[in-house]
Image (cartoon, rainbow, N blue to C red; front, top):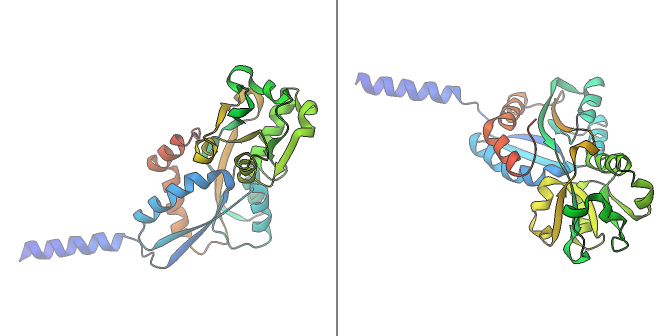
Length: 254
């Protein structure tokens, strides 16, 4: 009898330690480069937090920042850089400190049928007449676009290729230009080169010496009605399981 009572008390203690999340939804504004990562992280997190649901909205970090400033109902913001979260923090939109969760890596992708190899010639392949269009994300709104523009300027190629540039609103749209054949080459993020739709191309990692280290940072927004769930998600994102997933997709450590 005593053993049964002890067992019941133990079960009750365990249940009491599990937060009640039934019906709680955490809305996450995330940089477009995180789509592949969140497709994996979302169900994994929800499995560990029964009753909690993640609702993800993807876009360019600059566009999402503007939406947050205008009152968009997000709980957590995961940017592709550190600057946009810092901007929100300075304006009083966040609670706690900004937290780095990954380092973004810029890739140059080129269609195989163009007959050029960036692995041999690097960025100089962009000067070839066979490359008529180069896709990049909008440098004003998307940190990966800003890194691509910086890369071209540091490599002293920007003036020579600027007439070839086609701009996507975010990194996803830049990748779509490559998928549809609207551009022969483009600058995208490391997870995107793994997509089956881009298997018909060659990917080359842009040397880190050509653009500033792109620390991807997140913040919990002050307006959140789910602070406990937001804190749990932050802890999961920075934990070993999520970090292993991000590393597998080509992100660097925070």
